[in-house]
Image 1: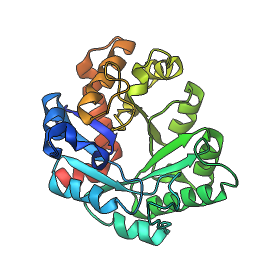
Image 2: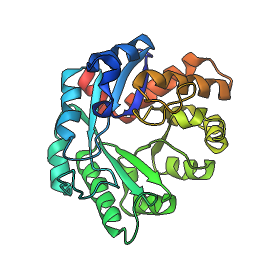
Image 3: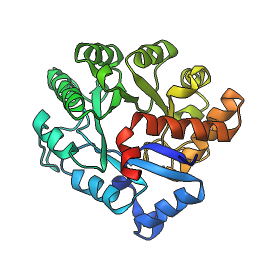
Length: 270
């Protein structure tokens, strides 16, 4: 596998394409110019799953996931479909779908009794186990419950990635003990993100991934602007600086890790 950089978590269907005169290809060309070889377009709801899948179907170097973000609920703008285990399995039965998620818990945006979030998370873990496709985990102000449910439901059977990791080294170690990789986003470039920088320095090379989470969380020097897959290069470069290793070393290890974790991606390319 060539050592082009991989954006392990982005939302291509959410990009403001006006930036490229309405053409998705503009974003993909920008990424290619920066040496980004592959991208994982991550699903957050059932309503937009067809768009996520279509991006992967149309581009050999783009993969997709299926899942419902922990904060997605009924509202006036969206018709919401609570995902059953059976539905997730059905939609994941596609060569372009390499992961289950984005799933997890978010106690920052949601209030009140959140048993429905925990139930949804458990269903995603069960679907991942049955499809043997890794999990993409979103965690915000819910770390201990996330780890507990992962243990209870046997998430280590399939493993996955703690996306946009912002917790400390102790949490990173617990996640890795559960067969999960750690993915760092543009947050690692922020001046005040010392906890994440410390994790970046300590991470074993064989468990590290990089991502943009575009269109969110653009790294320095684009902080505050729309993020895009091309900017994952800045994440990788900053991690290389923190670890005092060549940029190419981060490129090679994170690309290898991506295809080691997401075996369905490598199968689709072979």
